[in-house]
Image (cartoon, rainbow, N blue to C red; front, side, top):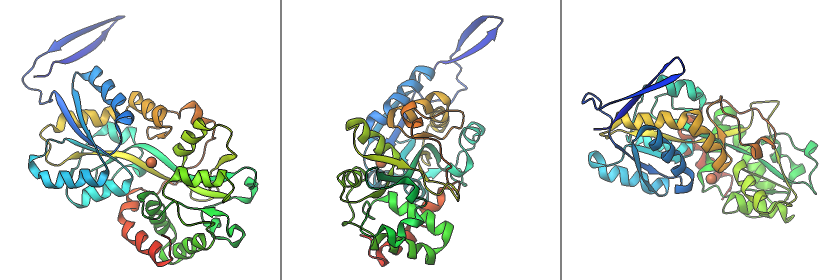
Length: 337
Ligand code: FE
């Protein structure tokens, strides 16, 4: 049985005493299936273990592989928690019945409501901002304004986009459908396609490399990819622009987690989830991957803070899942490959 320590503050002295109580249902180990790679999660798990004595065993793989594994394992799964990126993936895990609702005042305080599931089956742990990056030699930032404006013919032959096959742009388009409706979104995305300088690219970094090389002028990427690229090659002619600041705000998505429905260690898994939303773990989330914290009490990493503050779109990210199929169909209709 796990040894749980209680600490009480008495005057200036901490008195800590141990309880070996058989009444606690905390397991000594939590098993996590994670679509985030080891270096992005292990520091948080180590910190949790240090604080609670509960160890964390984890398996990392692509989100789709982990969802298939959880479905195949059913009630025999050893997993207690799923961590993955993109609300679209977490929404899918809910659709196939893998996640259990969690009642936790701590999670509700630490995570703003637009970054967690209204059914309480998943919770955002970091915010990723999908924003505009432009070539500083070719674009005057005064030319830039919104995602929607990139459909304007003044951008003809000037845009690079990541492929529509990856969930990031599917979620962006899904959130636009939620905001503008299908018809208007279709006009916008069709405008983007008409303005492409080249075929869609395989990832965000490649899209920025094309912009830096002058093959196109602007692209839409997650800001942490910009951070990584600039750290590797500091003198690239690239800069971040925060769009839609006079309107609904920058499109944000999350990495997040949910508790597996068939967990045998729900209490410990909830403890880990709450820990991941705490100031201590949120600091690690922001510093390790240059993402933004979900917890409003935590400020971004100093390198990230240099990119300036911005208004986030506060529409609930669950829409990215609900409208994902619509988004994929729409992108297909307008020839966005
Ligand atoms: Fe990513």
